Length: 191
Image (cartoon, rainbow, N blue to C red; front, side):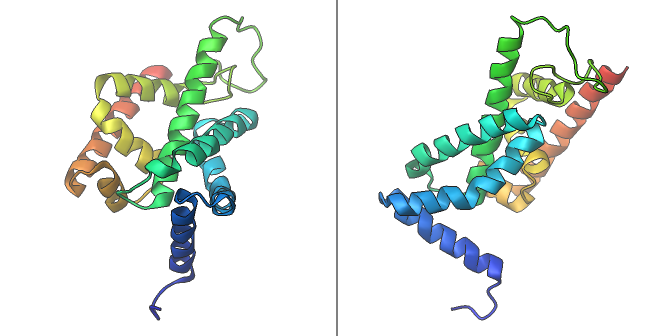
């Protein structure tokens, strides 16, 4: 064993071993993997969907996706990075579903203290952020994933570069481009 290994490195190695066992069909290992990642999944979903109930729904959907698609995880990047991507995608998908459903409902009720220009009555979500992400995805799809991984999932640049299979400089440029776009979108909403 490496004498310089940190407790975090040891936990990561244990999780990686559980993932391999779960991929081989060990139901107990799968349960342990899901239990281990559940707090991370919840945090990632809560960063996008601020209404607790909606974040919980998205987290549950993400955990189901992780369980059913675990066999597809091969890397690149580490397992927790992959979990962050699945979680962020689940939260964004939940938001889109809620947005479609709300189109059929009246917008008469907005909780007190929330700005109707920037807060969704359907999810308590930051509309400016989520709508900006949708526009970014439509106009610059190559930059969305790196932006979500860095600014919403808080992953390190090097890990993102591995996950999206792009040079570090390209990843940083994509994130810079996305941040500029999002700042412009937010400024338009506040104007």
